[in-house]
Length: 396
Length: 241
Image (cartoon, rainbow over all chains, first blue to last red; front, side, top):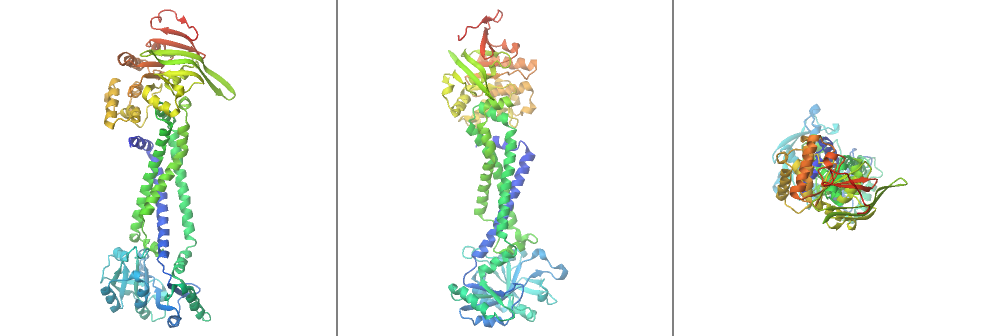
């Protein structure tokens, strides 16, 4: 600790260089943290998928609807325990040209009884459930969504879909009848930035011309999920509208696949950024040590061992990296915690579960940054270690 | 008793394929409490000899014993530790650390000890008082004159109370008045604090402050002049005496 003031003085020797390196590194760490958090949310979303839940959608693309009539035929297939119609509504606050895309959030019309039986993570208290069933305009929303808009039980709001087929000439009106906030240990990765409302309300308002976006299915036996999926798809093989039935996890993965191989891309960016951090810090430390060659010789002359001089340079590099890591992690934490409050930020959460910078990731990134700092300082530190006093003083 | 004993030391540098003999079988003894000036033309080996005494360089052959320790027997780490306890080094260009105040520069060697922060500060203040710069403790080197910087460097050299002070042309970068002040200070350290001083200098005015002048030429001692003989003609040196 007694060397820390000495180390800090040196870091502040060239403030512009140190601060530009620090902010550069912090930006990189911020980027890595944010990317890892998005990837973590995707993973959590996939982990929350259950093997007994299937999704049947249009064989060509999820954007095409399925006929209502498929519901009864699917429900009759052996092994199917429950079926719920569902549609991704695409509702936005406001209407017409004043639609607020910046405050976008996911909203789905679902059949209450079967859907909530299949998805216990969205369960609400019995009185809220009763109120929801009693009100056709009723909506159940996640706690994050309620916090973002300041909604509570009984709050009313209006949404208008940006999908022309779902537009009825006037906004859909909703009343908050339930707020879900599942146990994060039991149901990790649950997206609390979404809203669920009654399919019958949607179907009636659109006069059933919109069809069904997808059918959520629950099977009796998860081990037979693949077999049941095939039975569903085979049943519509000779229809005009064929289905594609897959497990919930595969279905969710297909959404991230829409953005290309996002995981590979994000990991590649993270690696490139980490390498950049290494080069930037190594350059800074090399310059800093090159300027201090005489000083290093003086330290050795007055009795500092080569190992101690080397350690001082490594500590300097590590302190710089730790400061940058702390700043980067802090910035990422602030951004991630407030992502839903940032205009357009809600769309990020649609990839999957709730975004949250975990303590493990933060600690890991700090450790990683300090390691990078040590690695970056290693070459100049070794140079200082090997420098002979007499040669260095003579060169000065 | 000799605090510095150089015995038949040879120092050879290799440059490309050529061996350059800098010190050639040199022997020398410096009694404790002595103030010695090493003089000679450029390339005569006086700075190399000073570096060997300070333990920052090693001889090619021969023995260097300082403060009772045979330096050739020490590892690099042991030698660094030994330097911190026994040697105070004064450079020609002061070599203070620009980002540290005068007090922090003087305190630097004490970081290698087990002293507490307050003890370190107290000792550094005392050293600054000895060199007459107690009022400049919070000043950075850029805020000091050349003579003041050299005095801070001397305070840094004496703060650990070393057995031997070695100075490599300590007045070489100073004007006449500042040089005089530095030489007076070194004289005081020798007289009042009984510090053994070995000083390399080109300046005859600096050399006369020393008790003894050792003149080197081409890696060997060419003559010795002590203060009693200074007014007389220098006597020729008997080899290996």
